[in-house]
Image (cartoon, rainbow, N blue to C red; front, top):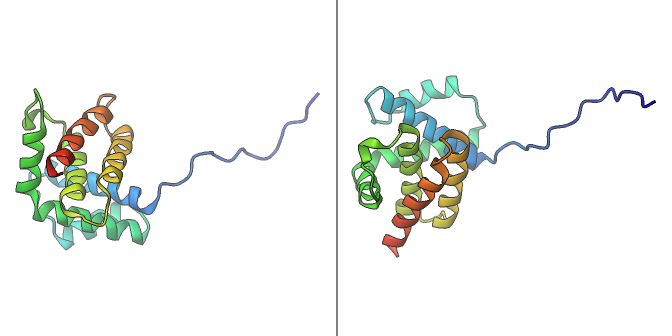
Length: 151
């Protein structure tokens, strides 16, 4: 007869990297302000968000950079997303998918220090966590078309 092990098994899941956590936070922030019908990113709104979503400083800084970048380039980003949709309208996108696409598009179009394929892969992983079952492949297809249109 085996005796019960008093130690708890450690979870095999490791914490997300600061960048992944920052990307997820950026999507969550953008989702929240879009729900309020306001896509203007201010320091006050970000400060309020950080009181609700605890995360490490590096992730906060990266998320703030992403959200400000999306906000400053929103017309161009949304235009690229619209142009890259096939058999779908921008208005039909779920808010989660739309904001994952915005963050991924910002990284592909404006963040030269992030390889486009890394931005696409990160967006797919976030879509797996935050979106529905169709989100990962949908996000992949749209961001891949955006990337290819820039080459």
